[in-house]
Length: 238
Image 1 (cartoon, rainbow, N blue to C red):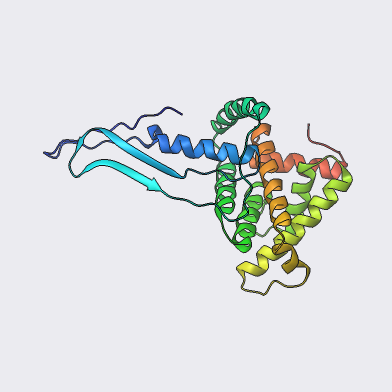
Image 2: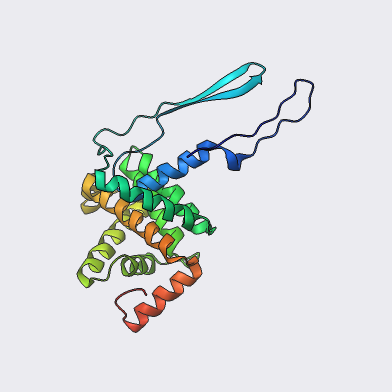
């Protein structure tokens, strides 16, 4: 995660240059995203301080923080085996991120937003927007198609696919009611207040993003493959 911020400053008005691609904060944010995608549990940049290696008028350091996790959020712990696995995961993640994909960028951003939200309503909204970024092919996409594609993509097992479809269908209905100001009640309210259900939706999106990155396909290519396999009755993506 080594990085440098290139800056040039002259009091007499000569240039101040800043290359954001060299900003270590961007690399740290990317690594935090990779950790979140690797496994569940709270992970974030709690506090950081930047000390400039030269004198800048009125500025000798910059600090950011603090962020406190939601109560009850699982602690993020890596076992010795996972400590080795995350190194391989991080290398593959960096390689896959070199292929610019706006849909994946957007899905990861919404995944991260949802990850840090305190309310279940906000989490559901962000996670389902992430699914829309990955699996909606048309502007007026039916939620049925989105859920069908996502469940097919996430599992080879018919029973698990049915469970994923039902969970996403429920989550999408919640999301629609929340953003339109309707009252969420009954089974949907009970699921919304169930931390296990919210974690399940989070994990579906985590798996989808990882599989999407591993596929190396564009959104259009992947949706076409999924649609063809559903039509043919194929059980898995090759």
